Image 1 (tube, rainbow, N blue to C red):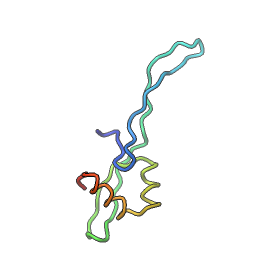
Image 2: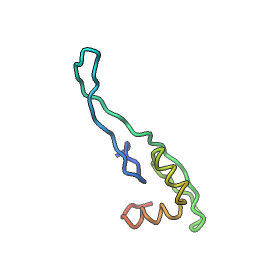
Image 3: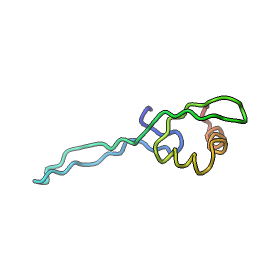
Length: 78
């Protein structure tokens, strides 16, 4: 699904829009998902990941090698 982060698994959220008169209608919150290219030094190639803003922070914190290893362990094809 295009609105899903590969790292954190964040998807579209659902809720209600409440007007001034308290009439409620359904709305969605879409995650800030972007397609980013990262270079894997161990393989000598670039990988394309669909990540949210929080996923980018996770990659900065843990490193791209550790994140890709975690994704492969979970069964995702990179």
